[in-house]
Length: 199
Length: 125
Image (cartoon, rainbow over all chains, first blue to last red):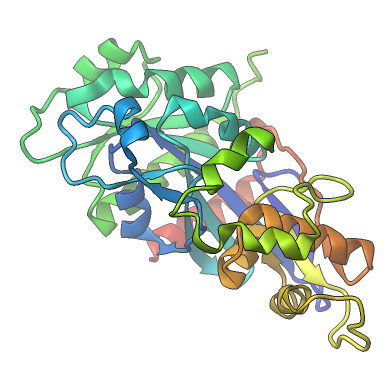
């Protein structure tokens, strides 16, 4: 049986299914916030404070009060049933940690690219990455207070996305909104499951 | 791992360096690689003879009595992921647990029933 996850049987024969979903986007776009809004955050000791050296690398224009940066991954857990668990991994927002992406992406069901319309170009690399690897993804626009609203179609043109690729508005702080983002991704994965493989 | 070493050797490293002592300085797990969400399950309900095992090995085994994942264990034992992978690989070599091998799955061959279960579950949250 094939699906975007792993299974194992325990002594009672129950399959244990773990599904991996990726959350990508630029630095400070709200990945950790979204994971925290919808799932049980499980700490991995992989964050480091923003040091002076990395502050030179990280652009914090328009991103106030961010004092730590993710060096490995954000990790959220949603237990849907005893034997069915979703794992959310935020991909590192900085290009210097991109070597970790290739590990994260193996076996992933799909991805959410979180975008901030103030810094839309920050999500170009993530979109490019998933397109090249034929990983199903959707784009979620995190509507920050004070950020100018753009229409979904404006964003689609700006990001050069296919007409069929879902783009949704969200508030990464809201549990309901974060749920809708995940539901939109799963629906998208279901819809492309029928399509012939393009390569 | 050489290029990563500098990252740990600052004043914020805290206990990150010391755990590698319990891996005898190894930074890579033995045997076949496994995924972050690979399922880990102990093969025995009781550990008869823990000789040769570090307390951290025992902790990992106890956590794996019911099927769990690599990242869940890393989180629960509060050790760096790299260390946990080495401990898991040791235990696998001893035959004390199984790690379900990562099976990369083309998303377009996804099992739709599982996806529908996920949708149902998310809507019910």
